[in-house]
Amino acid sequence: MYLVEEGLLRPVAITPDGREFVLGLLGPGEVFLHHEPSGQPGIGFYVEAVEDTRCLALARSGLDALAERDPALAARLLPAFAQCVADLSESCASLALDAVAERLLRLLRRLAERHGAPDGGACRLRLRQQDVAAMAGVCRETANAALRSLAARGQLRCGRQTIWVRTAAGPLRRVRP
Image: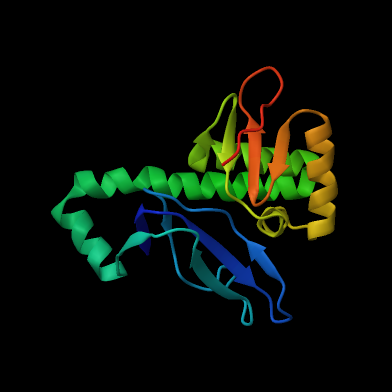
């Protein structure tokens, strides 16, 4: 298990035929396991740093010892695990029930809340359209069409490797990064 102390990571599952599914973004205080996420042979997994990142590695034996030595610290890790489960549940429900544009908007709002930089009535995310598509489980072209639709509705603006997600009422102002 790894705990992100600072920075930003992009965990990715990869199929035997080379298709990638970006599982999200991980920032300070978030945890991840480095394993085959599905338990299925052939599904690979890697984590890529989006920016300079520092992680704390915890082996299972070390985690058990930590829990015995400092139960309060171990208890503070429980919300991170609970958030992982909640995020997976939300992602599964969204994949099954939401239209692509709504799935993208829900995803972008969650990412903006956790990792966005406030920017005049919006949160700025440094994301490539390919990453957004991979997180939503669609091809880049489908994601691009959905992003254009959301932009036309005033929910977001797109720029070069940057997406501004509206956080306040009123029109979005585009601010140069």
